[in-house]
Length: 116
Image (cartoon, rainbow, N blue to C red; front, top):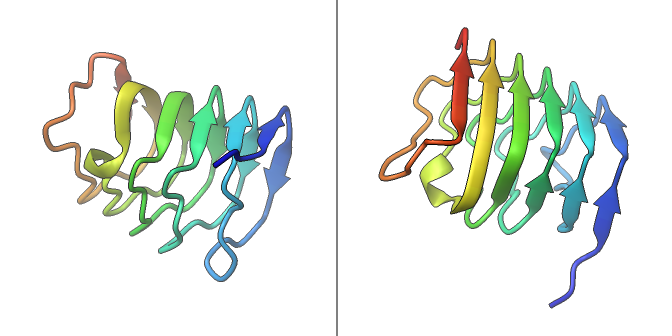
């Protein structure tokens, strides 16, 4: 199944709790103050993306891909990173809340935690 390729877009102040983010490959996109709480981001690819002031609490992320992604001042309470696709996974967390986030069995060599 082919999914759209979306690059170099900025998404601001969008609430994805009732309408999920469309399945696609997002490259070099920025998400600012978006609410993904309890939404489905399963099988969506994020490459070289930045999330600023976003809420990912209790999100469903089966097979989601995060490659060179920055989470800056995000709320990631209960995020199941262990359900994500671990191939090429690399993330940076800055000033983010990660309470109850699960990284079980993941190798986090390419992951940075700064003031979390």
